[in-house]
Image (cartoon, rainbow, N blue to C red; front, side, top):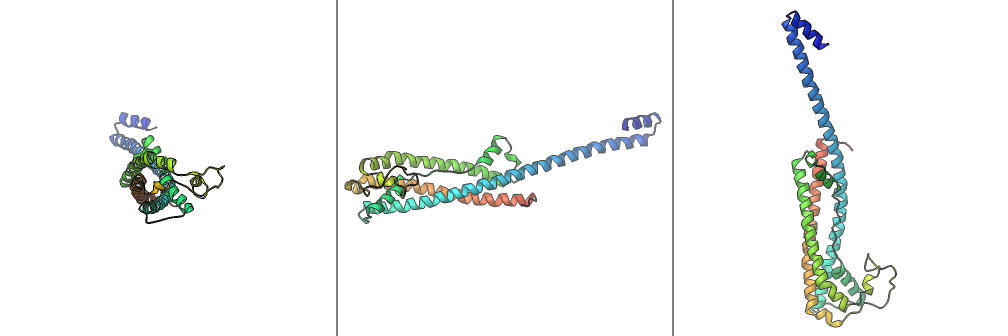
Amino acid sequence: MILARLSSAIRTQNWFAVALEFVIVIAGVVIGFQISAWNEARSERSEEVGYLLALTDDVRLSRASLERLNGLLASQQSALETLYDVHLGQSDPDPEEMAGLMQRGLFFLSALRVNETTFDTLVGSGRLNLIGDPELMAALQALDSAYEVTRITIDNEYQVTYRFSDPLLIEFVDMGPIFLPQQNRGSIPWLQPGEPLTMDASLLTDRRFGNAVLYRAYFSSQVKDHVEGLIADLQVIDRRVHERLDELGYAP
């Protein structure tokens, strides 16, 4: 239709009509591109909202897990402090209490259980730049790096445990009471209560025991510092996610 009118205008040398038809064509193309861009932007914002909502779930699960771990680490530090007092002869707990101290202080191992599903999906698909808040995107990348640093610190704690703590426990301590359900969540189902915790009395004053307690306390404290930092980072990310959702006009 437009081509027919344009051809007719050219044949009749109606230059005003020719110009008008060109304007109509160009305007149509521009409007078409603009509508396409608007639809694409709206689609991206809708997709971003979906990822942001998924991030809120990841943050909630990770924070809950880290809060639990932080509580266990606080309990471990308390137990290690008491065990060092025992080593120095400043405390004399009964066998049942000693079993709990051994479990919480020397047998417990940290485990970083966090949810990065959404972040990994964004990175893996090359869509991280879909997040329209540069500071939020940077915070997510920094959090991923902080997770890795924490994992390395936990691995260092494992090495100290395997090389120093575990050999002492295996050689000098009756581990049966430590594996009972009331002491250990990862208990042995078929193990029945027996005699109270027994150990070689010389262990408690042995320098190796005192040093093992100090090493575990040192690395456990480092892990705890990292965990508390992660909790703070997640709080910031959670706030920025909700601020970004508000900017996008999302209403739950």
